[in-house]
Image (cartoon, rainbow, N blue to C red):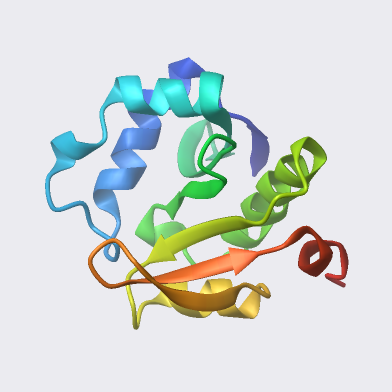
Length: 146
């Protein structure tokens, strides 16, 4: 497994990952364009990918403008292999090097993603976007992580 910063040349592969997930499925695949991805990894924040045998199998993106996790997705057959647990600290370490403002994310309730974020120390703070669970992580919470 190789973990590295995402490049614009990774966007097509990242879109494939995004469209193969079994949870937090986009209601319309056209909602997230290649241009959106480029803006988030170049202008608004940073992205990371995980490659296995030259194939992008997971990615994450953090947005400094809105202070949120914009994406953390894996191809279903690569779930449970620790990839998310490696992408997660990469983006939070980078984020908190840029700012000490709390970061938030939204995810569908009763999903593996909700369980994942709870286990990673995120605090549930309400709902966002049509009933998604809203989580928040503060700088102080993150630096206390074991």
